[in-house]
Amino acid sequence: MTDIRAVAVFCGASMGCRPIWHAAALALGEGLAARGIRLVYGGGSLGLMGAVAQGARQAGGAISGVIPGFLIRREAPEEDITKFEITETMHDRKQRMFDLSDAFVSFAGGLGTLDETFEILTWKQLGLHDKPILICNVEGSAAPLMAAIEAAVDMGFAQPHIRQLYEVINGVPPLLERLGAGQ
Image (cartoon, rainbow, N blue to C red; front, side):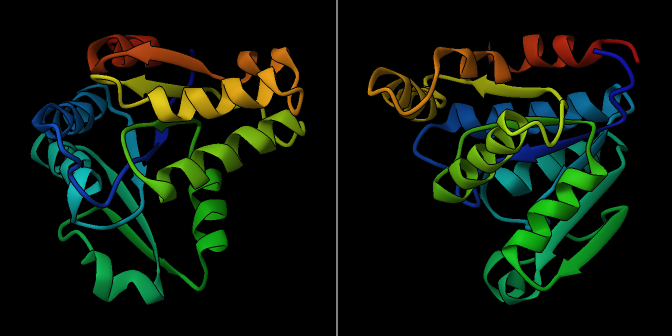
């Protein structure tokens, strides 16, 4: 991949049940910062979302947080980020994150993460963009997403070629390598 200057990371506003996900989120943020890649994320300080931002901030990275106004009290915006934007709606948030990013990483998370990932995959399927979409699998975190995609293919609701819209990468170091080590 070339010219990856900013990456949107979709991940949970909670930590999940495996401590490895928190450590991997910190490492992802640190790794992006070390490569000079701006983190674009949901703007909150909670859960894995906050951990990715914390890792990037501690490593001196540039961070763009985007949050809808109604979530400010619920997700506690991250402090000390480079750029912080408040949108009116969730859709506006997703559009703004898309606009700011050269690539997308889907990390561990819940319904919001799945929603963001499916929307960006759908936009790519419809030809609205050709930006890389990387699914980071850490200790089985990508299994629910992959199961949903495979079920759609198996049931005839999606064509097998949709598997070419994304890459599944096992672990943070290989993901960072794929984004372009040493940029």
